[in-house]
Amino acid sequence: MPNTAAPVAVSPLSDRLLAMSESATIAMAKKGRELAAKGVDVINLSFGEPDFQTPQYIKDAAKKALDDGYTFYTPVPGIPELRQAICDKLKRDNQLDFQPSQIVVSTGAKQALANAVLSLVNPGDEVIVFSPYWVSYEEMVKLAGGVAVPLVGTREHDYKATAAQLEAAITPRTKLIMYSSPCNPTGAVFSREELGAIAEVLARHPQVYALADEIYEYINFVGEHVSLAQFPAVADRVITVNGFSKGYAMTGWRLGYLAARQDIATACDKMQGQITSGTCSITQRAGVAALAGGRASSDEMAAAYRRRRDLVLELVKDIPGLDTPTPSGAFYIFPEVSAFFGRTAPDGSTIRNSSDLALFILNDAHVSAVSGEAFGAPECMRFSTAAADEKLVEAFRRIKASLAKLA
Ligand SMILES: Cc1ncc(COP(=O)(O)O)c(C=O)c1O
Image (tube, rainbow, N blue to C red; front, side, top):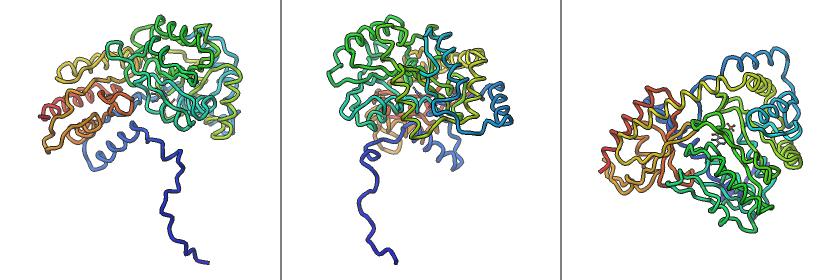
């Protein structure tokens, strides 16, 4: 029988989906690609992606894995060799003691974070998100039915939330805190004293857990990387997340992990088992090789990111109106751009906010960057510095010329 029913007027999509924002970094990269498809020479500084190739020894391990027939489902939380290698890494780099059963390997650190949030957060629970924050934290919390409570770091404190601020923000409903160090988007790195003070606050609130996102660990220009899980008073309430995308230039391989107390790791394994199962078998073999190779290739890439950071800081010094803190890690600069709000573009439109400015820069300078709004800092804008030197020089030359057109 023909279907004669009238088309449904209301959206069939779930409230959950409708309440969720699209990833701003992905959206901006998409706009840039659309412009590029029309033949425009767009310089993409919107993506959080190393421009380096994955080191050859890791690629070789993947080729060998394929030839050796690693083409089957793996255990949901990862192959034993990789979970052991991650334990060894956590011991070597972070002085953390974990058993392989406490490691859950995922399809990127993104899934590790989502597993933890979905496993811990009940509807109505508050999650304190150190702000500026990585775009997906808030949306993951919303997806779990939780309430994201931004804890805004100040410019004077390199945008890092303090222990005193945390103490004041915790309520009986607080379940979790989330932060990244080195931070995306600011590049700020928490010191041992700062994290120690945060651990002291958490020690007084036994119902509060912490998601420590350490994905930029290897891209650190100040030396010491400190894990919150190193503080014994809170160690069993910290879920440490890390991955291979940034440190080993393996974004497309989709490999991340978390290390946590056994009951939390088991919960994340259960969650993942119903959604994706284990990540790619070949990727996992490559991950074993990556860790066995140590930090040499990562350190080489980090040295290049540091040189580019310095280059970009020199370039932006020359652009009036961009107030740029010096990042201690990761590969972004996160200047305050509010000096341009209220100004008029050549087409007569007003730059009302950071999103307007990002669009103006894309359309006029053909450089894509991401509005700070997506990171909880509407007065700022994020530019990736993970691009070749000549691209960075050209991008900031164009940005300078475009900003000078704003009256
Ligand atoms: C702070 C932060 N956490 C997690 C991720 C996700 O990384 P992955 O590629 O491992 O999913 C990113 C990627 O941009 C990030 O910047």
